[in-house]
Amino acid sequence: MATDPPYDGTIFLDRKIITAADPTAFLSVTDAGQAERLMFDRRLDDFKNFNAYLFNATFDDGLAAEIQVNPEFGSSDAARIQAQKYGAVIGKLPTALRTQVKTVWIHQGEQLFGGANNNLLIHTDQADLYERDGILEEALVHEACHTSLDEAHHSAADWIAAQKADDAFISTYARDNPSREDVAESFLCYLAVRYRSARISDADGEKILGAIPNRIAYFDAQPLMQSIHPIAPALLKLVNASASSELAELYNGKPQTADRLIEGPNNGICFWNSNDKGNDPTPWFSLQLEHRSVVDSLYIRWKRTHGSVGARPMKYKVLYSLDGKSWTETGVDQSKVPWLSSNLAVDALPGWRNPTRFIKVEMGESSYGGNGYFTCHYVLLRGHAL
Image (tube, rainbow, N blue to C red; front, side, top):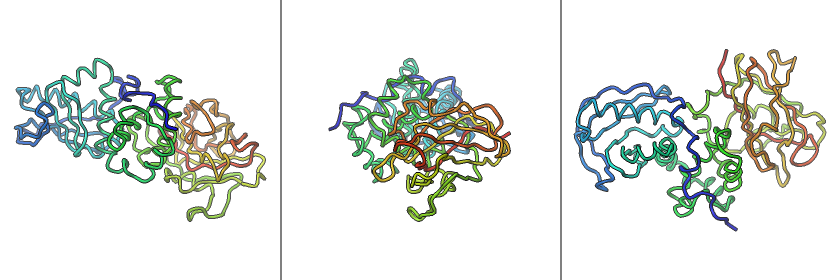
């Protein structure tokens, strides 16, 4: 039976999910003159042509947008201040949320923001209120989800299946508007538990994972998980994988071998499988990085169940090596996973400062019981090459 949502609206969840001190992908705005643009103004509740001040905003991930500023600001200098301010804030959003943002409308007024039509709508008096409450960035995350995620995901079969499996909503706003608001309300929580777990309370983390575990798993399985700059460092390239045991048997057309671990998000359709007869007494897998690197974070996407039994480890440790032969413990293990449970699909782990070329995950107790039976979809490492 569905339970009551834990929140009214998720932009109010925590003001520290993205802050003014966080990095931005924003580079600059350049003046593009003044010209007529059709802009939506929520004060009018309608579209209107304005002789807008225009600015071309660029970001360090190659994205760009035209910022259109209402002429009511009075001068190109005053409009430029607005374009620079909000360009920098928009640049704090992950790449995945900016891919479809082609224009930004900026008006005065205390009216709600908006997102759709390849656009973000900002009313600056409302922005001041959000800024005062510390949720300006969170509000823009929500609207950018409408712009960049809704069309591809809100009616996707796997998303609908995740909604049904959760049998709950993260907020009353999502529950009352399931087609229009559920993706946006849920994604901010995904961002919080995956990339900002140290900034939110244990109580909030448990509420999120308790209410929408299947939606969290849905986001985990999407390629958009790789496009999270500047929220997290860049992905490190993995070039080889091996394991103590594996299965050559095909699943969805691919063998259940260690190669699956370095292929990235795959919608849950393939995975590495250790010896499922329980004949591997010391199961492990090892991954090779393209270059010696410093690992800032590690994401392991386990397959929570295989058939009717659990298939993720409840105890394991991570080791590193420069040559793939001599191994040192990193100090990272399952105890570093926030809100660990047998139902958790992705373990988001901290990195370590030692230069690394190889990592190994040695597994112990399985959620199935005992050892020797584990499945894993993929592993992602973030950091920087040396």
